Length: 375
Ligand code: FAD
Image 1 (spheres, rainbow, N blue to C red):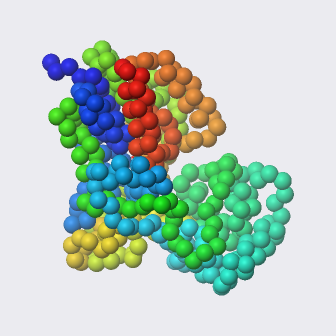
Image 2: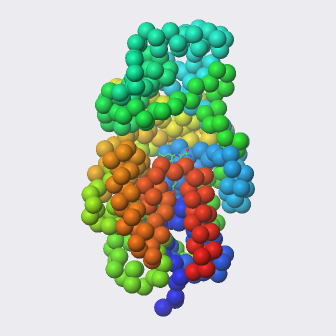
């Protein structure tokens, strides 16, 4: 039997970065993945000549030059800029909230006119003192029109709760821009890998010191794995690792409905958010627009994204980082810290809503700590 230094549970971005760096240090690494493919939630697959994001739209963005250089070793990125559009009962608005949005809503033309309009709406709402819920918080920040048309329905669908029952902290800040700029992110670097995301993880894992096994759930033979491997990097759910002994952490799940349609261009944009309460999905992704219309003529692939209440067995796409869950996570992290054999990493292992650049950063920090301590 080959001797491995590390078992990595999960072939997502965190596991892949760790595996890659450990292999470069001469360590032997075994990666197991319960899905039938690598790359976790950044997995993309070619359909009709288009890279389809199987687990929702993924746009890479960062202001950290080191992370941008790091990821560019594994793929060339195009110049895609995220400019989502909102559809509210057929009215189309640019996002994030900017002068194009304000002009369409109110006919205002200057930043001064827009700011005055927002101030009037805030004043008219007469919310005094600390906002007690998400609705009050949103209106305090941006006024009633934008709240009603672009925030309320979308947020209620996403969280499965009324805005008046959701905590205010979810939207401490709202990106508001008094310029005619539809670029969603403020980061210096942004793009989509030409040829998709899966190749990034595939290249990270392509090393003679790394052995990958898909369709293998850690929990199918947890005891043997812990006995056989001196070190385990675990990127699954930390509460599941501890058999939910302190209680369940909360997650939100999603259902993706993907279809290929016999048209060239279905919606004219990669991402359209449906911000009314009646439409059951939150957004439609048209994948070819991530690659500037590449792909087969007269065909396009779209994905509708439906929010779903999470229960055991469902994919836990989003941690629900409210006070209760964060406190519970801290208790689990304490249990985790007592186990020298295990490193908990990634979105599920650290119960944190990490974007891709943050997960790469976190993995590199973990690698550094691991190898500097001379183990
Ligand atoms: P994951 O990708 O979840 O990888 C963990 C892996 O572990 C999974 O493959 C899982 O199957 C496996 N696993 C779990 N338990 C076990 C087990 N018991 N045994 C074996 N394997 C197991 N980030 C951005 O930067 N930009 C975006 O636009 C963006 N959009 C997103 C949209 C959606 C809908 C979602 C859900 C996420 C988005 N993200 C985005 C975040 C991005 O997906 C994550 O940052 C990244 O995928 C996290 O990598 P990870 O390795 O921590 O987790």
